[in-house]
Structure formats: structure tokens, C-alpha cells
Length: 483
Image (cartoon, rainbow, N blue to C red; front, side):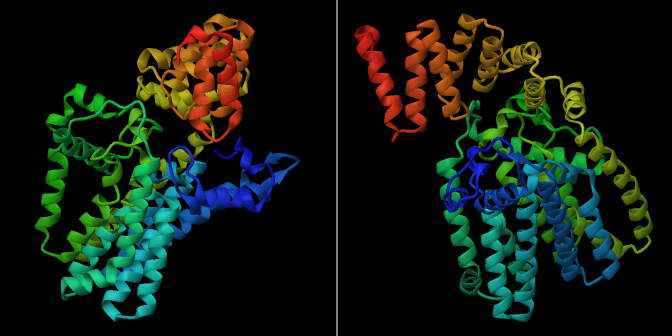
């Protein structure tokens, strides 16, 4: 997405405009893409991209998000110490490491930052009725949605704020919220059209609330007992169903919600909104692409940690001596956070640890495959690709296997793997890969592979005349090949 992105080869208005208008990897986050583009172009030196700019952007965004969390908690609690500790809980919990350490986690950081800005200014608006605060809240909502599509839940979060903090008519509430609802609605339409779930086993609608509850239970466990973090938890809906845990994990979020609601304070309801709503789009209620690996991931909980920070602050306000307990917990968590950050600097260790904890992980094996490609260790690529295929056949694994076999000059086997990769009809097989498959087909005089590669290329670039000409040539050479 960054280092090997051809759009970053040279600075141009066209390249910048594409970042603002085109989805990548089935996600549309134009503000994040534009920032990456500007950093990438600025950091190029002799064609090599320097990572420092991206890292600084991530740390700055996380730091500002922590300030935003502190600000929102302070506005709600009006208690300086509670707000500081709540903000530190948000900033230093080990579950936040993935978003800050993973370069492409910037979309989560920016979405969190602008979501918190939106909530903060809307809180000020409902209290002071200043139009300036309302306009800034609208701007924050636009920027949040442009940073990551999951910000579509912001209007629901603001509605909870509105219901809890002012008594007015529904007409006035909607008059305040309509711009945010409009922005979220447009984003939802875009998401529906560009974010296509691939290679997923469709889950019955009646089971999806249980899958979502299972996801919430997972995050509550990881937050309360922050150990054994992984890039890929191999926690797909199918895995959850087959393990039988859907029968009982729903009890955990039900108990959590019941306990919070038992606190007769409107702030407790805000805790639930801030914690639960940001997770809902990626909880399993609707299908999304990454579910082929796992429904849960650390970075999905990034914004929800604001709710945990607020909950901690509420507890400190009610029981002041808890501030000392919180500081001890923060110290312990900070140690785990530093340890996790160090692990993230060594990708082979990160992925190997992931496989040790979750033997069925696909994503970690994909990471090791990328590292093996960098080392030009094609035998390791073949071994790992075959492991992935044995666990869950997919187009990327077959494509990786095909590339490894080509480098070993095992061309007929490579062609077989390439045909299987193309059989998934997935955009994960890029135009460049389709071209290389055409070359492989020409070397072997493999008419079937050539036709599949040309058709795939046409599907990716329907306006490009080149693959159509290639396909017509294939058909003219073998009229009996079929339409």
C-alpha cells in the first residue's frame, strides 16, 4: 500500500487526486490516503522511501488522540485527576500498540482523533449552544469519516450525547445532527459499493448478534487481562461457531452492560455508547473482508478505549483512592506496552509468536511469506503457501505458491497454481500479476491460463483495450476454446 505503491513514484496533482477519489484494498479513506501520499513523496530519496515520516505521523496522531480523549473525559467528569488518568489509560494500554506501531494503522488513529474532536465540540455545543462549536463538530465528523469508514457510527454516538445532555424535541435534535447523518449516509453508500467481502462463509442472520457479542467479550477480556496479543487471532465467525463458544460468550457483554446500567448515572450510558458503538461495524453484524482471517483485531478497539478511559475516570471520581490503584495498573500496562512495541520492530518474531499462540493464523503466515520473498527464500515461500492452502485455500496463497514455483523453474506446477488463483475472481490478483501469468502461459503455450489471465485483466481494467486484444487473439488462434 505504501512502499510498493506506484502512485508514490513521483509527485503530481493526478497522483494526489487519485488518493482522494479512489478506494484501495476495498477501503475508501481519502484523508488517510492523501496524508500517506504527501509523506511518501516528501520522504523519497533516490527512489527509496524513508519510514521516519510515517512513524512520526503515527506517533503524533496517537498523541493528539490521547489529548482528545483527555479533553472529552474532562468535559464529561469535570475532574482534573480523573480526566488525566482516563486519558493515560487510553494512551498507554497495550491494546493500542497495534494502531500506533502498524504504519497503516494511521487510519484508526486519525479516525479516533477526529471522532473525539467531534464528540468534544458537540458536548460543548449542547451545553453552551454556540454555533461555532456545532460547526467544528460537523467538520470533525467529515474528517473522521474521510479517515476511516467506521466513523459512520458517529451520528449514533452524538445522538446519545444529545439525549443525555439536553432536553429538547426530536425535531431540534435532528436539526443539529442532520449534517453528520448525511455524511455518514454517503459514506455508508460508498462502503456498500467498494468494500466487498471476499472468500467468506456467509453467516446466518440469526447468529450474527451472537458473533458480535462474542467479539465484545473478546475485547473486554483483552482490555482487562492484556496478554497474548497477536496480529491475527484466527477468530473468524466459522472458528467461533466450530469451537462452541458462541453458546456462552454472550454472557460476558450482557453482564458488563447490566453492571454499567446499574450505576444510576447518565455518564454510565455514555460509557456504553463510547465503548460499544465504534466496534459494531466490525463486530460481525455485517460481513467485512478481514473476517476471512479474524472478526477481532486490536486496532478495531482503538476508539472504544475512550469508553474505558471514561469508565476509569468515573470510578476515580466515586472512589478517590482508586487513583493510586490506577497508577499501579498504568505502570504495569506501560511495561507490557513497551514490550509489545519492541516485538513490533521485529516482524519475524511478531509473526512467529502469532503462529505459536494461534496455529491456524493465515495473516501471520502471509507476513512471513512477504519476509521470505524479501530474502528471496522461495522454498520457504512454497512451504508457507502450502500451509495456508491446507488451512484455507485462497487466491493470494495460490498466487504466492505460483511465484515460488516459477522461481524454482517448476513452470507446469506454477501454471496450475496460477489457474487456481484466478479462479477466485478476486481483485487481490493485480494487473501486474495477470500480465506475468500471461507470460507464463506463453512460455508453456497454456491457452487456458492465458484466457483466464486476460479475462481477469479485463475485469480489473475494463476500459483498457490491451487485454481485450489479447483475448481476441487467443480466441482466434483456437476458435473451439469456448466463449
